[in-house]
Image 1 (cartoon, rainbow, N blue to C red):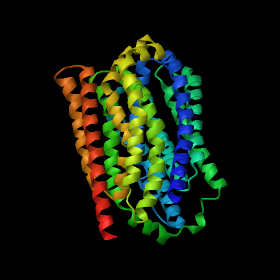
Image 2 (cartoon, rainbow, N blue to C red; image 1 turned 90 degrees about the vertical axis):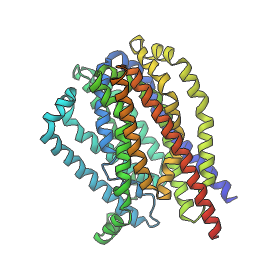
Image 3 (cartoon, one colour; image 1 turned 120 degrees about the vertical axis):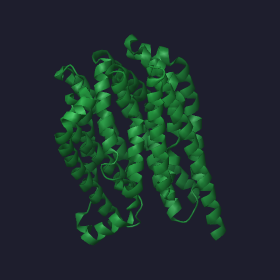
Image 4 (cartoon, rainbow, N blue to C red; image 1 turned 90 degrees about the horizontal axis):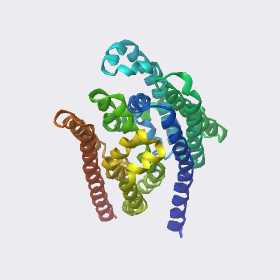
Length: 426
């Protein structure tokens, strides 16, 4: 009876996040055909480059201490980690501002179009980083409605702002400002709800408790921060390298493809990631195996997403041409190259989060390092040997498919070994 209630609660929590994400992504998809008709591929390329830079930095803006918020048994320790994560994010945003001021000329030489938005990068890092922190905090407290609502606010305000700010400039800055406003308002929703629900207590903070938790979870900044930084950098390599090797137009085509196909990954995989991590962490900390929940969640993700992805892959050229306009047919061709790579991303959240639970940060760091190298080489080979952006994207997708498949199988094997060890102890 207890297991049944736990499973039902797990499903309910997933559905709560999925529903909010579905509305959020529905807003994004609804407005996207409008945006592709009022912004050019080059403007989307500038926007994609901005997101690539901000996303790469913000993923480690709290040194990954926000992931540790879920783990302590005592709320006082979680409060300390919330404070640490927030403080580090603020300091990192200020540091980025200083670095950009010092090296702005060198960066403009590499990415000429970065001058369009260079001073907006610290603001984007702050909004994105703090949103990650408070999303983790609300997830720990099982305030899934707050997280779900914040996603709707983010997509809604982003869409409205991007449409309204078209007249800001002819270089796509309206897309960038819209994104910033969406993140900031979404963050304010989570902060307001956290304070209103009386879950943030500064009285419980102390220097000793803060230092204890910094030391207790030092593996997150020591290993996890580097691995996710490398992963984020390698994920955004296509936009950066396509801009350097080819043009912002090509980067714009790819960014639309990735954004459209990643919608199911964010809708399903992102929601499952948070709930799985919360549930599996508690199972593991109680001394039990996470093998069953890992198998169920991974297999269900495969069942839910396989057929839709196959259909999208078969008809992507027509879909992109009709939905986004004839100017974007190249994006539809890209979709056929990367569809199976995106599929593996959609089904790997249990594997990625299990790495944190099992303490496999060292392995993850090595994995992300070699993955980044392979991705960079694949894009360079497509440019250097074939002089074709199609070849670069195809090789990049193949590398992603192979590495993600390996990760899923490797983590599953580790979970099985861990299960055997725990059963032998019992």
